[in-house]
Amino acid sequence: MKKLLVIGAAAALSACVAMPSVAPAGQFAPDAEFTVNLSEDWSYWPPAHNPAMEGGYVTQDGFFLNRVHFVTLDDGDSLIRAARGVERPFYSTGSSELEIVELVTNSLTSIGYTTMEADSIRPTTIDGHSGIEFGLSGKWENGLNIKGDAAAIPVGDQLHLVVFLAPELHYYDALHSSVGDIIQSMDLPGSPAVG
Image (cartoon, rainbow, N blue to C red):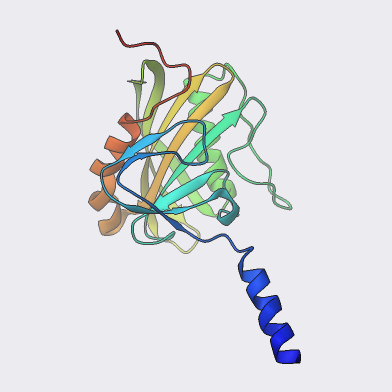
């Protein structure tokens, strides 16, 4: 009888665990207030499985090998989750481009990246909205070199972010172009009518 109770309890607990799902090629709605177009299938991990950053992410090869985070921040929100002893940067409506870049880089250094710098900061227009794109480079706490890309598009009081991170060796180059397409495919709320 005890074995049945243990098995039943384990089954009930496993139903509460966040599991990945397939993010099929095509229009995809992550747990953010925008959609993106994926050219191939990815594994999607919902926000509940992301202990350090807000939002969900997709990956081709696993969390430590490559991931693309999708996040919508409201005024006063942080990109990272609260952790004891960690000072969190917060988004503020009307932030300058430099402040948005610093929000991303400072957030990443707060969650285990020993360094994180932005490069190639440039204006962009995505789905009729002005924003910025930039590259990322840094080191994970174990010394692994990391590269990435980010797009930040403010719309009203919200900031819509896509953040791609991968080891510099192989994984970044393998997905950089695909992630650029994902970023350009962002379908944002309040987009101007195309006519």
